[in-house]
Image 1: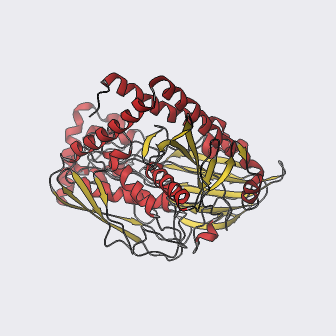
Image 2 (image 1 turned 120 degrees about the horizontal axis):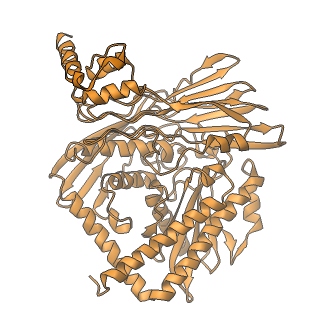
Image 3 (image 1 turned 90 degrees about the horizontal axis):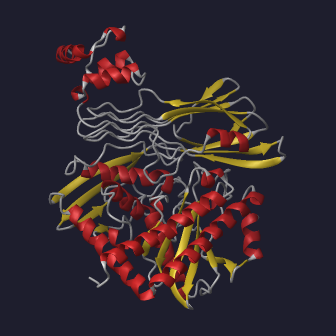
Length: 588
């Protein structure tokens, strides 16, 4: 413990958090691409100058980037020490997107700036932004059947994009020569750099006010306290071994499901994670790099214990055995485009499935668990330019011991939200014919899962190619403690009036789209929590009145018999409805 008074400690911690939040805000407000400017598919953080350990991350950043940006910064430091990257100077900005070097998939491009204070390296400021295209076989980078990482796009080791405050024109030219819509990338690049500059300016002000030694002592204290808080939470879990599993639809190449098998052992005040028994490395792009696998465990635990502050100390009680020999430890040249957006969420689902047994009051049933990655690339004749539209979508959250799941929530891995359809229609030659709640998709339970959405988008001009990397098309998000699974993901492409469903259900690429053709997607609902026949009949009646379930579903899923004329039911009739449902269940 230090002698810093609690008020100063709290103010400095809040100040570091504010630095990251301002970087997040600057990044989104300055970015060109809707996926960053509107969907907030980005993150910013501060990392230790010597070790790369996480100091603070913006509250509006994607949780999946918490661990990966720490690993990426650590890798950059190792590269500098080994002479594989140039040493840092004031005003430099490194760029890297190599997934095997502490990353996710190639579209998540990371920038790192060495932050010097009074001539000494104090920390690293880093951010990650999802670029709508990074080259590769298909527009948007989500190649559903890539068999090598080279097919997924341009792969960059840590190199200096900015040297002493000036962008390197040669590095920039190499990037632009290997990606689509290169003329539109400068807006996102400048936004990413601007966010780091804002962070440097605000961090300088914080250090000017409190001094280096006080801030360093506060960082060390907060790291220790985060570890203590996490251990205090873990102490509430009964000692023992818990098992959970989750399934990926397929790898996009071989039409067979991939298994995530997870054993969690609670010993003392620490948790030990072992993925032995998971599927081996796969041919298609659903392999996960080790940084993403680690980060997926971290974010799942943070979902369960949300009030523990985020820094490197948060992860100290979490011990993950490296899953060698499985698809959760991808090595070059395994393709990985689906790792951050999809596999990461299946890993989190396995964590939830394992810990709902010892923590039924705080762990939920499985959420939708898919980012719904949909990329449309083509040429707009009216604007005389090429485009790549990337859309992510929400789904239902799982029910829990106290309430129903949220409808159309963000994905498990972050707070990224669907871009407004009006913005997408303004930027790209498309028209959304439908955007609606997906009735019936919430898994039945005493507390049902939230609902996914339906959307249908039509191409208005030119020609295009559609690609999908989604999941939960084969099996819906799993229910908990007797609850039923949520509704499955669905994709249907209507070409010349004929319906086409991908062989792999949720994954396909390069589907040609002409004017008037449409793409219809239904996102998963959340899993239900608890016995559906224990659901309050009043809640079932309200669900039916709202159109969430049909009268037939109310009877079959919840055991509540409703007449065709719902207006005839008064408050006193719900007990009769439940009794009728129970009698029907018994007779069945």
